Amino acid sequence: MRLIFMGTPAFSVPVLDALRAAGHEIVAVYTQPPRPSGRGKKLQLSPVHQAAEAAHLPVMTPSKLRDEAEELKIFIDFQADAAIVVAYGIILPPAFLTAPRLGCINVHASLLPRWRGAAPIQAAIMAGDAQTGISIMQMDAGLDTGPVLSMAPIPIAPDETGASLHDKLSALGAKRLIDTLNAPLQATPQSDQGASYAARLTRETGRIDWSLPAETLERRIRALTPWPSSFTTYDGTTLKIGGAMVVQGVSSAQPGVTLDDALTVQCGQDALRLTHIQRPGKAMLTQDMFLRGWAVPRGSRFE
Image: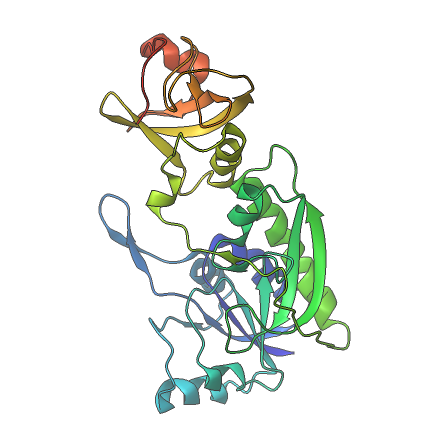
């Protein structure tokens, strides 16, 4: 097929690679514009942009897509059979959705309609779902509401992190898309029953609320690794929490108060023993290594 590819983060790159390996012609790659990054705020190309340039593919970087005649004409003039959309991050107006012969096809990281929205990978872990997966969806004007062409499930491991599940679903999405394009396209309308919305992650998403149950917080810590990461404040210093384990038991201590000298913190229900902690500007350390340089005695409070 003649395809337009639309994606931005690292999650999208294996799909682009798989399409090329399968012999599809990529007539254009749309990705978000370069963004300032690092201490020097140097403009950084998106992972998809870098992959496209390495493959000598034409790259388009509009900051927005509107129903303006010029932008739409460029899109139509590619004469694509379909546009493949994978975590592009820019809303497609209705006129763009219907421009390719077969419309726009989305690779979405959940078993729709379970998690619609921007952060389905993290949402599935935080909710304690036993499984998630990939949905290949025909896009419509709604938010991940289009009919589904195919799905592929995958179990969520007890120690799954946002990073590990991201990589598994990225690879699965590439395979499922190729299989779907090789078969007659048959779409099944989505039901709104059981639909959930996975809101976009922000830095503040990672702030730990110690009044929540320990089991809930342990899942959140795993889900938000590596970004935006979970964090708390102790003695005026923001600490990033990279891992924790649930310690069951009843205590009269207030949430956020340590129960021993080993970083066991009372939660709204049960407690969390922090296993990986990071100070600003330092490396992530195991519990033992962290405590060698900074004692946190029993009765200390995490904000």
